[in-house]
Image (tube, rainbow, N blue to C red):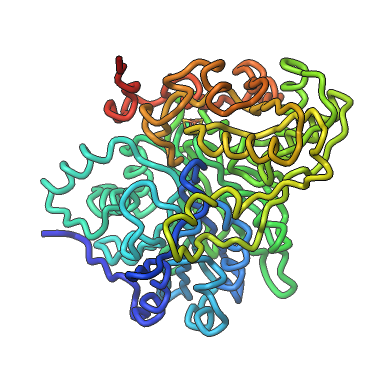
Amino acid sequence: MSQLLFQGVDGVADISESLRVHNLSTDHCSLSTVPEGDELHEECGVVAIHGHPHAAREAYLALYALQHRGQESAGIATADGAHLANIKGMGLVSEIFTDDVLAKLPGHLAIGHTRYSTTGDSALLNAQPIRVDSTKGLIAIAHNGNLVNLGNLRASLERDGAYFQTTSDSEIIVQLIAHSHSGTLVDCIADSLSQVEGAFSIVMMTRDRIFAARDPRGFRPLSMGRMKNAHGPDSIVFASESCAFDLLRAEFIRDVLPGELVMVSQDGVTSRQYASGVPQSSCVFEHVYFARPDSRIFGRWVQESRDQMGRQLARESGVPADVVVPVPDSGVTAALGYAEEAGLPFRMGLIRNHYVGRTFIEPEQRVRDFGVRLKLNPVHNLLAGKRVVLIDDSIIRGTTSRKIVRMVRGAGATEVHLRISCPPTISPCFYGVDTPSKRELIAANHSVEEIRQFIEADTLAYLSLDGLLQSVRDEKNTGYCTACYTGNYPTQWVDVEDILPAAVTT
Ligand code: SF4
């Protein structure tokens, strides 16, 4: 018999139902995603708050700052020492959590989650936090990352009588906790985490405690901070990125360490190392693209890393030009570094329309062709007659890059030199980043010269792997995962189908 009872959305089905609008589709119009699938997506952002009278509101603010890590669904669970409430919905944080909804989340403890799905589907059932009534008591969990030994664990748990309610890999962790024979809850959690392989930065909550943990390799970031309270002990907060602390006026304390499990209760903060001896392999792509430049992750400011990537790119593959133009927003910091190093003017020659939402009304199929143009528009007077160095952070399938190069040339640029602030992406990610399979990655199947021809740039150059690693180097010698650039995966488990190159056609 299963040891778990899943309770879905805890009596707020009306709220969740009303937010399904983004799944809407009719005969005459549909809601489509912007742009056309040539961007990479992070899976999730997580937050946790301990010891704040308005924990739900603080979690909401932190999730708002982490919205870039996932826009499909969001959720907040709160606890007041006796009860545990949980509300989640499809859509953006600000769409789901109105004042009325937040008022239904009492308590001084909260965890929150914003999701872009890569494992499991994007249905509300798989939105997080997941609340579980188990033999170990009520637990809510929110998870960033991907487990890679899912199949084996799921099969062995099912043999032990586990009954899975979702396809989310976070449920595996809770099932392992419920099935653990260790004596205390914290031992059960440590036992569970030591059995899973892959990437996870996790926050968990019981009626009166918060837990935060990172996988032994430290793939995904997770930071700990402190908020001063005028009339009582400090609140302890956790967030995927430190930019969330700024909105809360929280002070950054430190990163949760790889393989560390932190527990916060009314007695204070305790920590244990549940796993050690595994080399750190934090995701270097967080520095290249995902994390916000105003965040400090893996012990280093993202802004500083991107600036260095741009400078290194200029040193490695500088080209005579008149102006440096970023592909906004993520290419901006690297472009600033490139321009300074190359002694060239930096110009915002492409403008991003920030008011294009996650979705747009698509009355007719032909609108799909406008995908990139809905999002980016050239500034003609900055580009006309200029030799342009265009800085972007990745080329995935190549189709979006080609449209951008055409757009810049169409605005009158005489030359377009594309520079990419990381090495060619040749292999998919299994650790929480939604990359296509090897067959669809242009750099996995074509030379740099072939890609240049495809995207119609005058020249194309990528940052070297050495240059990338040099750009993120710190005094602690943090170890990085670079598998999407090398194909060398830090874990044993990968999906063989996904790493097969494209079939050779004649
Ligand atoms: S494969 Fe790439 S995106 Fe995935 S964790 Fe490693 S560096 Fe990050």
